[in-house]
Image 1 (cartoon, helix red, strand yellow):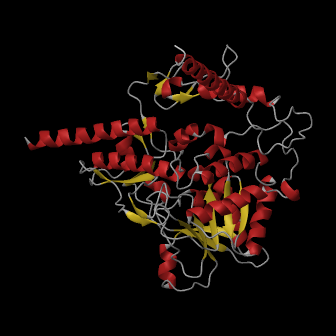
Image 2 (cartoon, rainbow, N blue to C red):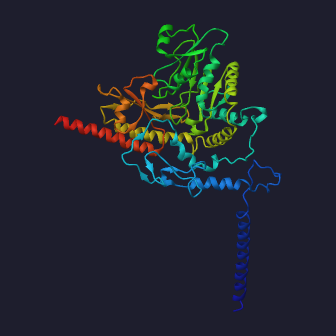
Image 3 (cartoon, rainbow, N blue to C red):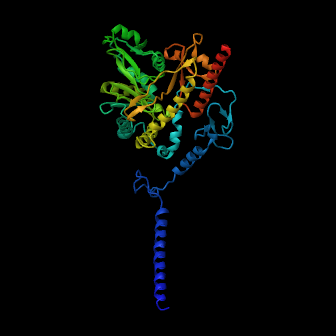
Length: 483
């Protein structure tokens, strides 16, 4: 018994020691885990009485934003802060095409699918997954002045982000060029033509041209503004033939869309000696392979096709010649006094989020390419069964951004009706309850029509359903005729 006592004592001491260590660990864990989160690095320690980084006036705005974002609308719609307010004082669901009801749960019977618009809603799920990184909350007195950083009309930080993005993606050389912001690339169309045209005192008039099939806004804007300094002169074919692809002595401004809208072809200028405007709206890795950085004198881009934020209306031009850049900037200032400062702030947040995830698991270009590739494969599988319609052929090609051969993922399907009697392809598909954009708008044959693939997943699922019905009806009719 005398030898057992010391053993029991030692065990008790061990128990007390381990208990003490465990309690200390629990106290430390409670202290650190329950401590308030570190303040944002954007906030200084002396934040003018803001409570050491604690939220005050921003809480309500944050709660409202989270509240509407949490509304599911059955997965077929969204609630927005600026939506129409109902009797309950809250904005209601805004339903996707072919869905209705208070929560968008009802499928509209026998609905016609809209595949006309280039509304880039296919990227909405990406930003829902990155809500925190892309969110913006601002005070009511944010940037009330006409001007922004250093008395300028453009955000210096946003310009830096744009240059970093082009360098990281490898789609454009930006370091030796001026950057001019605009209200979407639409504003840049006429601004660039104005800047490249002869001076009004010269007595000369520039001819504006594009290669068929081209983006119709080039033509419609030039005709609308009806300037003395420039005029719409149609297809490049006549100019290329007249000059024999050599330098022309006339003032020619050539729009070059690359990749092209509607057929996704990578184009180069064809009129020798022309002032070329490279429209690179779709020159991003989720839509096309990037063979090398573009280094033209004038290039334009837009966030609507980069990030999907079409409603923000933000575009920019990269311009080598400082005089041309000044003329474009003067046009923008006279037209809209620059680009919305609120838009620039939102775009700064979006660009930072994109840059932070390049080549990672959350890369927007990898996400977008996966979505668009899946759509193209599914559409191609259905159309391949048809002899009545066909799609443009786009081979897999090497992309410097992904550093591999990538599958095609175009923004649009350029559909051709193969039967002689189907001379109006848009009308043929409309009878199948599919709204498309006739090739006539692109100065092409009515035998072609454009189908948008960049809208929401709901839109694509309905499109695929209608196309399948169309092809099945064709095959059924062919089977009946062969009997």
